[in-house]
Amino acid sequence: LPVLNKRCVEAGVKTALAFNCKVNEVSMFDRKHYFYGDLPTGYQITQQRAPLAYSGSLNFPALIASKSTKTYYKTVRLHQLQLEQDSGKSLHDDQLGISLIDLNRAGVPLMELVFDPELTDGEEAASLVKELILILTRLGTCSCRMEEGALRVDANVSIHKKNEPFGVRTEIKNIGSVRGVAQAIEYEIQRQKTVKDSGGEIINETRQWDANSKTTIAMRDKEVVQDYRYMPEPNLLPLHLNMSENPSD
Image (cartoon, rainbow, N blue to C red; front, side, top):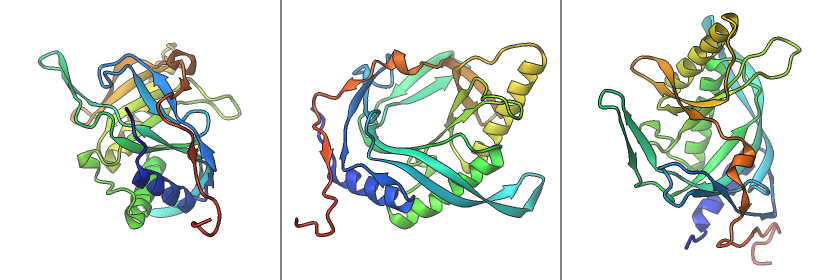
């Protein structure tokens, strides 16, 4: 049965405070159901209804895409910080036409930081990741070694005209470097523009970033919230934090 990891809770709270988040005195765990090979249980333990923390912000320096020496400051809102369990790693071999699953990290705890859709291009996203690396390594809550999978980025990309609602988004996975974050997002923006200009429609899907070809490749349709059939996690009690100034109280 799952057991709550005290050190993960401490790391999550420390990170939340660094990002000016409001920490929930009581947070809860949920089951997110989906049927994919990276979690043999058929569900992931996460925090959907009451996450560990929410409503944070981060101010960071970003590069002007056309002038790599010019910077400006941007503030992005952190929607929520939640604790959840990791899934396995999918390995896709296009030449052999097979997919493999590495389950060594399945069930390992992680922090997920969900930012509001306020970034405008790949360079801003890469600058945000750089700032995250500086802060998290300084806090000691994450090694941030992307090559080892300690820090991973899933980018959600959509395009829309000014004063119009957000367009249909796609999620990009398998981004393994800061530079890859910028390249993957810029490619996906241009791909979506090309599809729209040719009269096509963007579909809500999950795509993976291929660093060799520098393209995104369709993986599967993106599930929506109701497909996950969230339910309270029966094996983990609500997490109560001692919010008093004196921890011994």
